[in-house]
Length: 475
Image (cartoon, rainbow, N blue to C red; front, side, top):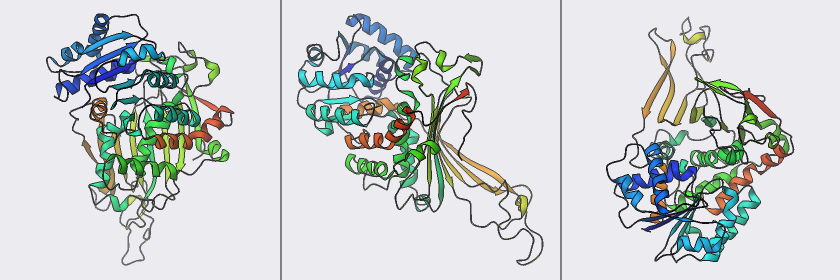
C-alpha cells in the first residue's frame, strides 16, 4: 500500500465533502494507519495549521458519525503547501519525499492537462499513481490529448480515472443481481426487456457551483460519465472475472456497440432544458440564468436526456434512456429495467376471468391486458440504495389483478464510495477505474449530441423549478 497521498486542489468542494471524510472512514475501519501522510496543495496562502482547522470544520460538517480518534488521526496526518498546480517547481515540492506517491487531481477538468504536464516535468517516484475526477477531458479530442500526456507520465495501470458511482452499493448490486441469480440472467436481453431508464433527477439546484457547472452542464456532468458507466454495467456481457482486465474489457464492448447517433437521431432522441423560477418544497428557487455566476449566453443545460440503442446480439431492439436534471420536484435516482408484457393473459377486461366455458368466453385470448396487468419493472434505487420489483398478482377478489411490489434495502457498506475508491488507489487495484480507451469511447458516443446542441439543432427548452422537467416530445 502507498503511504503518501498528495491532493492538488485540496481546499475545494471535492476535498471537503468527499476526500477528507473518506480518509477518516478508511482510518476508522483500520485500512490505514499512522504511516499515511497527506499533503494538500492549493493556491490559498495558508499554512498547515490553518489548513488543519479548515479540514476539521469540514469533517464536522460532512464526516458523519466518526469513531473517536479517526478524525483527529486524519488531521494530524495533513500537511499543506501553497502551490500553482501547473507550475513544475511548485508541484515538485508537493510530491517530494521518499517512496511512491498517489497524486489526486481534485481540480476542474480544464486544469488537468497543465497539472499532468507539471507532474511530468517535476518527475514522480517509481510506483506512483495519479487520480483524475470526471469529466475526463471536455470532448473526444481533449480526452485523447489527456491520455497522451498521461501515457508519457505513468503506465496505464497507474492511472485512476475514478467515478464514485462505480463504488456505490446498488451499482455494484446491478452486477450481483445479474450474475449471482439464475432467475435473472436468462431474461437479461431484448427478448424480455423493452427498455431501460437510467435516471438521476434531483431536487438540488445549482447550490453555489456556478463556477464549475456553467462550463459543463448536465450532459457532461452526469450523462457522459456516471450514466454511461451505469449503462455499461447493465448491458455488459458477463465477464470471466471481476478483475481489472475482464471487467473493463466488457464495459468497453458496450460503449463500442452503441449505435452512432445521426443528426436526425439527435434532433428526435435527445432534449435539453434549463430551469425557470419555481418552488421546491419550502424554498423558492431563482431561474438558472439568474443564479450568481451564471452566464446566460452560454445556454448551459440543467436537464439532459438521450435515447441510445446498442448494435449487439443481446440488446438489438431495446431502448436505453439516460436522463439527468436539476431543480426538479422529486428526487428519482434509479436504474429501471422495464420487461415486456406477457404474451397472453387468461383474464378478461379489467383483470377479471372471462365468462363462459372452454375457449369461447368473451375477453379470452389477450383482452386481459388492462391497466392492472402492468409489465414488470426491476428498479435499482441509487439514493437511497435499494432494490424493488414491480409485479402483478391476484387481489382480494378472485382473478382480479392488482399491482404488487417487492422491496429490499441495501445494507450500508463499511466504507463510503470515495473510501472504496481511495483504498483501491492506495492498494493499486484499478478494476473500478476507467481505462483510457473507455474514456474515449464514452466521448465518441456523445460527440454527435455535443455538436448538434452547439449548433442549436435541438432547442433549449425550459421547465419550472419544482416540476417534473420538460414534457417529452417524441415518445
